[in-house]
Image 1: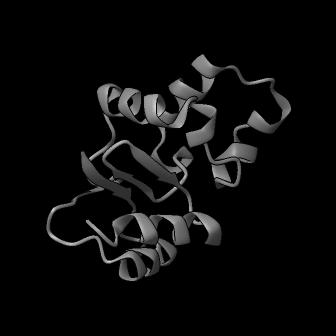
Image 2: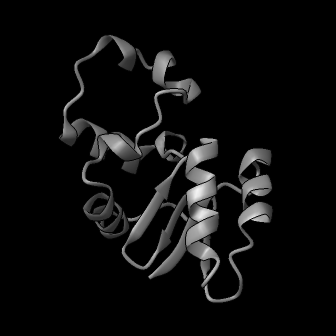
Length: 118
């Protein structure tokens, strides 16, 4: 699978997409316009190892909803990821069996390297 879950209104996501240059073989899904499904989340979790790895603690709603005060478990991460698109670390780039989650420079560099062969 060659897919990128992103947010078109996020300048950081758009900058990263410009950097990695995914090409026409990748499917881009704007998670605000087309929310992730339970099946898609399962696929991401299988590659990432956990729902927690996909979950963004820097999302504005994380503190607003008081989640920072809770001991979240995997089922909780799954629930919130499906309920609110802002909790997905973005972008999520899937290139075959490789997954790159978030916008850390090291992650973006690894994604770029992986996409060189596209």
